[in-house]
Image (cartoon, rainbow, N blue to C red; front, side):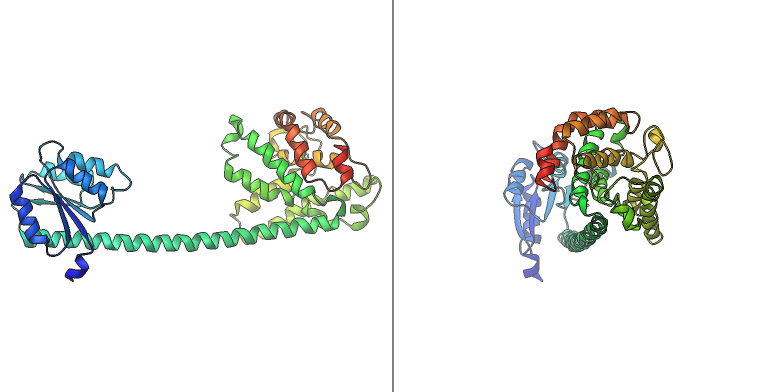
Length: 369
């Protein structure tokens, strides 16, 4: 038992030689024990080797015990050291002050050896239990973090799989999902600086939109091949069928929400998927909502989606230049697109072009920019 106690380092700080002698005789055979006759020397010993517990006299020449306690509790490295105050004054207000400052116990002089040993033993056992609990909590948090990472990786893989399904149905949009998610993130990061969007567009939300964006056209898996893959312009009837893809995508997401109704990821995905073809003036689809009735995610995705469609090759058209695409986006300010987001796009158009160049599907698209 004594060998086990020797693992603990105790420091006694008291200006009374008699009290220190009592403490040394009472504790020296049990603990790794140091002494200091004033708070200043005690602080230097603490800095040199952090003790497991401090016995601290309240009233001393120079710095008082309360002052030293205040210093220690303000330091991250020392605030968890248990402090037992020693005092010759049996003053309830002093005891209360000591406990309020963070002391774990208060012993009134004259010191009784068996009492002080018992109190120290109790506090060291509490400290050991706290350390075990802290280690357990750390191990548990690591397991939770690992599990969260596994779930996140699975979610990312599932998103990628679903986005790829839409790509395979529409082979001319290979890099479309990668480019558009980067456009959305870029727009969102700058829109977050606006007072009206800052509360919603947190870093967490922006990252969520980045992950949700690849799913914007997932509903195209429900569009018939002869329409989706048609090399020419769609008839009015065919276009009406094509316009159903936001609804197909929304319905697919909602079928999953029955299992996890509180999933923020699914809620954001549903909003973006269903509304990215709505227009600021209310002439879009599928609901013909307008202005700020359109979720911000849908308004962000609208610009990203249209810009990329313009600068990319499609079966029915050659890729447009970046300059022409930017002019079309600007022309749609206040009609097709959110005016504020268009202004942001115009400030960032060079960065949009860089993303398009980096992730272009072909040399033709790259050279046309």
